Length: 384
Image (cartoon, one colour):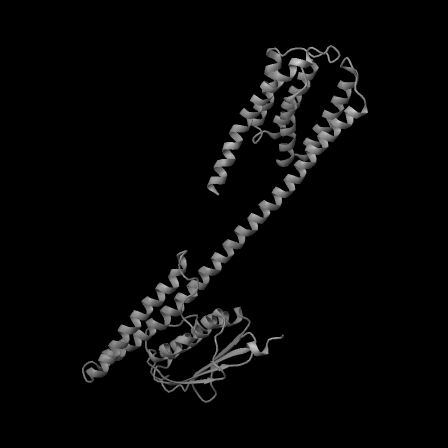
């Protein structure tokens, strides 16, 4: 983008110089034969002619700031040039450029009015003000040149507008995706930190309670803390790595790591898997892991001594998750962890994939989280 802007600025600076050289040198060349043809009535260039030839390039240099003023000045200089009987030739380059630019800059009415006025001027000039009047063919050629210039300018302006709109939409989409990525990363960080810090807090409390009377059990709790702190650092690096262009765009947490999650949760968890285990889409894979992780985190916070049942069901079109505890540890929750937005976050994850999630107390005590996440049809069920 920076190189493109640099080349655009260079072209804006060079164009007036190129047009000035082309008009002056070209006009000086074509007058050699026109001034010797008496029927044309042309005269050699003098200081007035050279000055008028430079008005157009000067107007082109300021056309971005004063598009209508550049148009009026260029056309007036061109008409004056012809009325002074100087020779035909490259003098018409500047009017074509400023007419074109007036359309592109959005001054369409001024450009079309100026084009019409120029056509009428040429008709009057070539009919009554030159030694050999021209016929309808000459007038048609002038009209065709003006219409072609204005039509091409209109086409270019419309195409340029579409490209600008496309770039604007693309930039807006990029900003939207970046915002969604930031929200996703914030949710990932919340889940990673909430689970592991809750686990560390629980195990630290256990170690402090047992360190005097049961040092071996305290040692186990401290080992769990060590592993949990290592895991949280690893997962945080995985989540934050999405900020690097050369890093994977998806975190590493997935359903294949549920055994590790259960093992280091510090809870008594019974795991049941129904159906044929198979790879699932990345979004479902990550969401399923995070829902189980958040459910175990909530049990660690609010019912740390409970027995937990985790059931994972691979259906033909959905992945079903069920996490429930018996509430046996609810009487002695770990203090100091506070609440959070874990359940709303789980619902958002499920809803974003077209699934659903329900969470609430069980009739016979404890708490239940149930989620369904949609899956594509297995290969043997896909239509042929």
